[in-house]
Image (tube, rainbow, N blue to C red):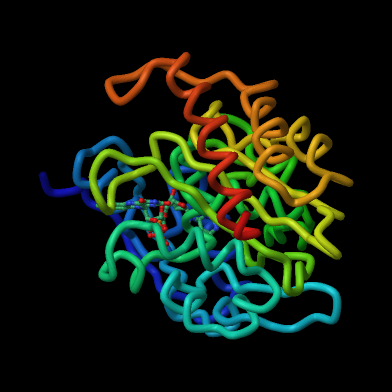
Length: 284
Ligand SMILES: Cc1cc2nc3c(=O)[nH]c(=O)nc-3n(C[C@H](O)[C@H](O)[C@H](O)COP(=O)(O)OP(=O)(O)OC[C@H]3O[C@@H](n4cnc5c(N)ncnc54)[C@H](O)[C@@H]3O)c2cc1C
């Protein structure tokens, strides 16, 4: 289907984009890589009267070393993340999850900011940013504010961003040289996650010193598996301790039943995939 008519602007600075969004009111929408928004427009599930294209704003692209954290511009594409050595050294979990997103064409167009702002519960970048305690920066008419990942994802396809705000940056504390793995379960290659697990762990002398685990598609928002983290810390990096910790993966989740899997099966998957994610990360 052809989308409904809309006006289009392509500003070159964040300030211009915020002003354009504010002037058009609630019927305006930001477009980043367009990989999720264009299908929505073509199906006429949304009919914004104005599209504010972020594609010409250079300041929204790239990865910056900020000392104890990496700051990633919202318009950095998945492809841009995968080719960046700072990401593989300090945020390996993000790289591992990014590799599983869709196909090369989509990874060339889709952006980290778009994937997060879209807040699809099956989206593969939301759990990794939650696991790594990322902070999002939003720019709006009253200036900039930061939102912790824990507070950013509010519900299905809903974030803490206001309609007149633009996600500008994602700040990820460095997890330098931590082991990491994103274990994704889907029916066919390049499909969305039925369930997935993002795990990154710091192992020293054979003991798990720190652990961060988050789940994709186990609730309306990505969920931190705090029970698993608690159970892993201080344990030997062995298959037995990983298995015991993974048994707590479904705690605090509220998975849906749909055509791909029922809630009980998703809970089972969360445990199996958590075990695989942690074991693969540390080679146990
Ligand atoms: C066939 C197909 C398969 C896919 N498979 C996967 C998959 O396996 N895993 C996965 O995670 N994703 C998958 N995707 C989605 C893909 O990752 C999208 O690129 C991503 O969800 C959105 O990124 P985008 O840059 O294209 O955003 P857009 O489509 O441009 O925007 C998406 C939404 O976010 C808003 N938005 C975007 N950027 C900002 C910003 N900076 N500030 C405020 N709001 C913003 C837009 O207004 C819109 O509502 C798939 C998409 C397709 C078409």
